[in-house]
Amino acid sequence: MRTTIPPSEVQKAASLRFEKVRAARLSVLSNSFLVIAKLIIGLYMGSVAVISEAIHSATDLIAAIIAFVAVRASDAPPDELHPYGHGKVESISGVGEALLIIAAGCYILFEAVRALITGKQSENLGWGVSVMAVSAVINFFVTRYLFYVARKTDSLALEADAHHLNVDVWTSVGVAIGLTLAWITGLWWLDPAVALFIAAFILWTGGQIFRNAFAPLLDERLPPHEIDSIIGIMNSHPEVLDWHQLRTRKSGSLRHMDVHIQVDDDMSLRDAHQLTEELEDQMRDALPNMSVLIHTEPYEEERRHREAAH
Image 1 (tube, helix red, strand yellow):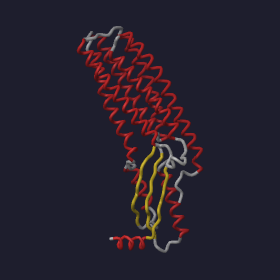
Image 2 (spheres, helix red, strand yellow):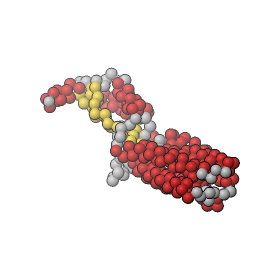
Image 3 (cartoon, helix red, strand yellow):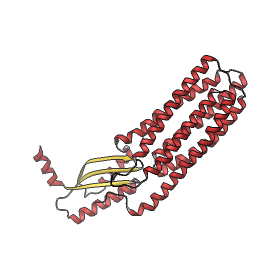
Image 4 (cartoon, helix red, strand yellow):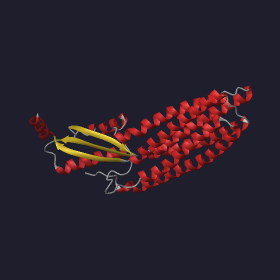
């Protein structure tokens, strides 16, 4: 029985790895530019909303750097100390990114409430509207690319990074609208009020990312539709009389599964081996990056063994 990804997929894996690293690098560069731009404009204006966005982008930058490191480390091949590979590095990085987002949300919430209490007013609102508009446009296109690569490579780290930037798109739009309204109406409290909205949005998103990233660390099973696909493949073979002890989990972009199948007691070893090979190939075709382990048992003998055990 084979338990590793076939050698024929090595070249494809290398290509996907390169694309993941390139996407992570782009995220780092775009976030670096936006952090500097927002911070300079925010300090110049004295706007709590723009400074909050600069802090938000700074957490995105740190998250992008974490993702860049994670996608490189997680694709390292299995070794003697890590026979199942290094895929959980992506989950760990996702948890770290979520905690950064939550911390940033708490800080922005604090600053917004303080601004409302002290009555702090910002100036030169047009600069804030401009930098927010530029930020929204840049992050919109970077986010679309990150989501595309994350789906293509099944990368949890890139998906988390894309969600961060997607939040940044909407918060940038929200700040731009709030500053525009404050500019037109002269209502100074709209600036910190928008910052409160940003804080709430960030905290909610951070919680969602934490949940998605933490699940693989507990070896949560694969999604129901993927398990249904595995079961459907086994049920499509009449030679498989029964099956049990199906276990699945995910580590980074690599899926792991093992199962016990039962076949006719008189089936030859050659036929049982061929059946197992067919099942493994079909499962790997149905679900990418799948490591499959199938244990084959004689149906009647296993039934007698269970009855004797009880």
